[in-house]
Length: 164
Image (tube, rainbow, N blue to C red; front, side, top):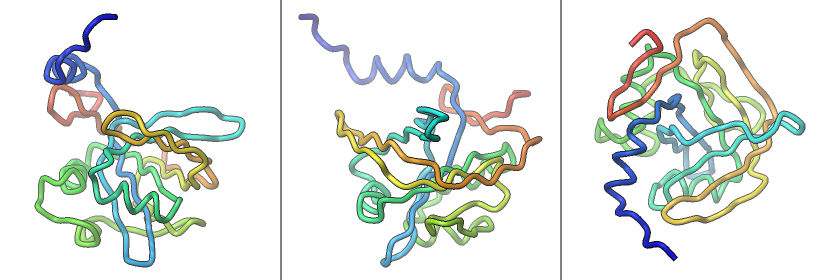
């Protein structure tokens, strides 16, 4: 069996993978929580499901486990400041992060960014713990989409749009 590579080498390689940026949110009786994520992807269209990876040390992980719901909000390039806020770069936590942006909700009650490119309102279907992260497989119950924007991307430690 081969030895695993160092985490730093892995991270350096993964910095070369451009990814769409989302804010994953949830709501529970104690309030709302959310984080910026790039580890989000489609699992299937029938039934509609998404995969969302969340670090197990984050406050949002615990909130999602407690609520069993989440909303994946796909960000436009104009949302870079909001992405930084939910990534912890503003020093705000929990409910305080929601002071930025315009938030509503769909059927699960998880916060939906009203001007997101798309928002996927979901209920957790499966949970898998692997390494430092938890993989949530979520059934999409409702979608709100506003096509035509410029998706926010993240690569090599930088936010960018499709045009650069």
